[in-house]
Image 1 (cartoon, rainbow, N blue to C red):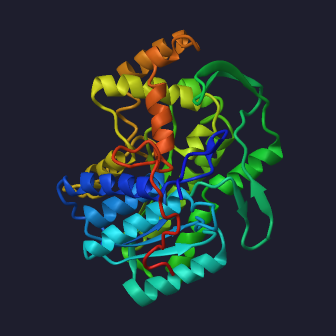
Image 2: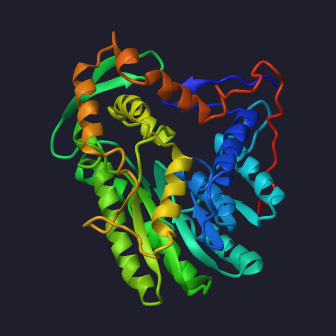
Image 3: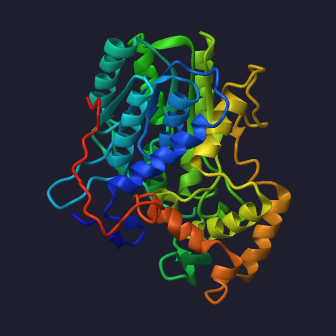
Amino acid sequence: MIIQPKTRGFICTTAHPEGCAQQVLRQVEYVKSKPAIAGPRNVLVIGASTGYGLASRIVSSFAAGANTIGVYFDKAAEGARTASAGWYNSAAFEKAAAEAGRKSYSIVGDAFSDEIKTQTIDLIRSELGSIDLVVYSVASPRRTHPKTGETFASVIKPIGGTYTNKTVNFHSGDVTEATIEPATEDEIRQTIAVMGGEDWQMWIDQLEEAGVLVDGATTVAYSYIGPEITHAVYREGTIGYAKNDLEATAKRLSEQLGKKGGRAFVSVNKALVTQSSSAIPVVPLYISALYKVMKENGTHEGCIEQMYRLFSDRLYNASGETLVDDRGLIRVDDWEMRPEIQAEVAKLWSELTTENVYELSDLAGYRKEFFQLFGFETDGIDYEADANQDVPIPNLR
């Protein structure tokens, strides 16, 4: 059938299989063009089908030559409904990995559940034996606790007071003011339960108890800090409280794994266009301004460039030492947060209006990247041609 983008707010409800595959192959080709990494051998990526998780899997496989298991929650096509973008991404990755002679397996289901953890452990035992890197890159609005059965829902809200700032409708280009009421104590609690470190801790505990995590293993989870412009709704808001919990979990895991020579990190990554970031008021406008400045400065990176730099320069560099800041965080947002970059972004921010948003920011680039997340607006794809929406994932378990 002919597949066109259909949007509902910050969500695209369709995905194009050929466009998604092309995006994945471009990331693969980028990694193959770079020097190899003496890195992990067997990698588990939890949240592996899009964004930083997918890029981590690509770097592991095609730069380090690692075998991988990807865990993610995505849906296959059903009738006239397309599969999710993550499904098509994973199908393309699995095919490319097989052609390169890498072992790779996919598990589709709720990563928060004990059932999926057990299924993953059984697969590690039967196919890989053990894991030496665990990447935790889960982004979900909801979580059902596997022990208590309580379902938590995260919110994107400030804490302590109402917040008002500029935002943009990236479809229409309208720059307006968004006002967000502060979160309640229960909303803070639930957001931490969804986006904090408890599930990451559960994964590591169960992998250790099952004996499938090697001595000296590394684990890394992903976070974001960002500039003062976004702090009230992000770092000092409900998401920030959850990320604080994630960072506290990293310290506990570092002590836990360190007893056997292991390591645990939180990597603070650059602001990028993702479905999650598109949902946060203020952030799309900030990213649009940031993209303009960093592209003009020659320092712009996407997910794959960020993850290659994380693996090659930080986690698995020649010195064996991982550079962290005074809080123990890996900072591959360092180029974004350079004072001269942020000063120029702040200057643009003060001037942005509906009338000049396309001139003073890269909103057009933001919008294009958003649709590319779902396989659209990709060069070389004929979107007027019939596409087969029923794409199987090789090695789906």
